[in-house]
Image (cartoon, rainbow over all chains, first blue to last red; front, side, top):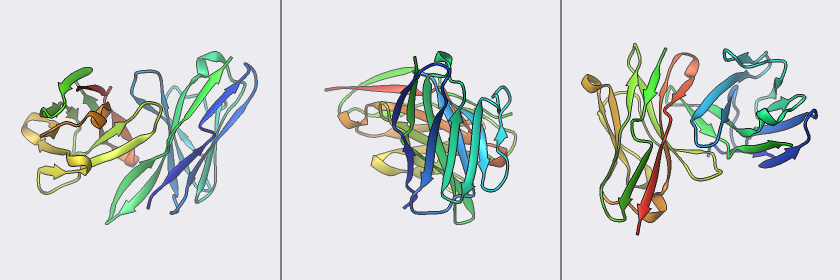
Length: 117
Length: 112
């Protein structure tokens, strides 16, 4: 159980276009999902917390108008990179929060490699 | 704010040798601590976690970690490394709002 998928796994887009990345919890419901960004050979940086039915909470320094997050259902959160530029090229990973025995754990998706040309 | 330090960027061990990856954290309250493994181009897989109780935690794939409050450490160990263990390892601490703060990672190379 607790499987998280991401689609697409890899995407190449042209500068100025928008790209949508999906994060799904396959066998459980997740009221909260998280979006991370990982640069090559670096750690994961939390971008935002996605809450079902409400606005996402963004970390300091993350442009909310550039990285649009929608959590329309208990199994799906989407991240849209608007007007993408080469510096947005990165590995984007989502996670879904699961409660286990009164404590919360995060299960991670396999990631999406975005390349902006 | 919480922080995690993984002092070793790269570690190389021979297959069959023991392994210890270091992790130090900073957090004002009782920490929830995690170790994750990431293979190239993949997401993260949870190896083990510490919430409370026994300070020696057993995880998957033969890994264990020991929480030492006095040293603010949560080092990951494995008695005998396999070639398939080569990957990036991340230590993380959970703060408010279930937010995870990750260390910079340790790249493990296994020599055959």
